[in-house]
Amino acid sequence: MSETVKKAWSKKKKIVVITLSVFLVLIVLIIIAGVCALNWYCKTADYELLKTQQQVTLVAHRGYRAVAPENTTAAFEEAGKAGFWGAECDVYRTADGVWIVSHDTNSYRMMDKTANIEKKNYDELMTHKVDNGSNIENYPDLSYCSLEDYLKICKEYNMVAVIELKGKNNTEHYDEIIDLVNQYGVEAVYISFHFENMQKIRALTDAPVYFLTSEISDEDIELAKSLENCGIDFDGRKEENFEKGMIKKCIDEGLAVGAWTIDDTALLDKLVENGVTLITTDNITK
Image 1 (cartoon, one colour):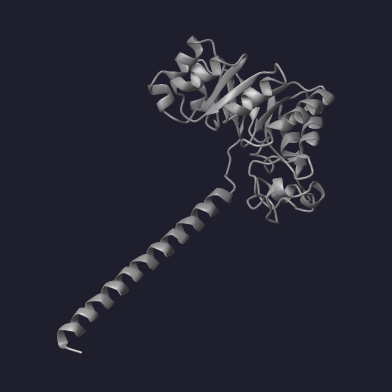
Image 2 (cartoon, rainbow, N blue to C red):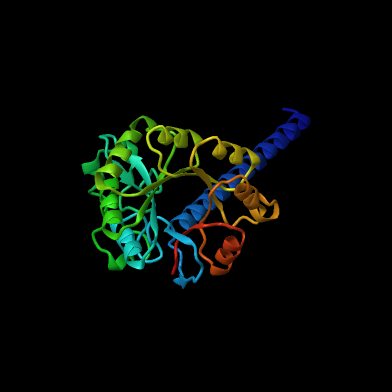
């Protein structure tokens, strides 16, 4: 092999080695970033319990999650004891047709076992134990809260059930949710990021609904206006919603307006001053 060919081959090898090295470094960095993001998502926040004197309707986000692990019977009971107007929950349907309260479709973040809720039967899921959340040491042996258990607690404490309809599936079974709400005689409000869910639930009940959105758009307003008794519930932490005058536009269009997730009393005051009447919070009570 000539020296020229050897040098050319050597350069190709160097290029390949450098390219592979850069690729491996990128893979490692992506993995590290993913692990850090997952740890951040799973970490329980350090909440400061706050009070407000504002005349505003307060909804306990996933129950009173600043005091007890979110979306558990304990969190909803604590919300009731604290006097919240309503308690918000998130629902999924198990493989055998039981509605379960959970923010995530996967149990990894909150439970000692990992499973996809919608692919497991209720009895199997009830062997999972909560191992994450505020003051977890004070609430031993917690498992999943069913929608039925949640509604019982709402009834006991005279709280409005604020039910977030997750995903775009299981809409054909929404009548089961309505039947349970009617069975327990609880006042309910339905919320979702998916307008199709709002349309489906509206066909089954005349209860109030709120279209969830991060940053209010003209299209969001038009969609909400197209559905009877539908308001908009937006991310109250986004400055864009104030700067673009979208809160006022919602109100001018006759829409009820709510904001999430507000854990700061100064921000709550600002939202109330702008006409927001419904506040979802982790840690603020009256």
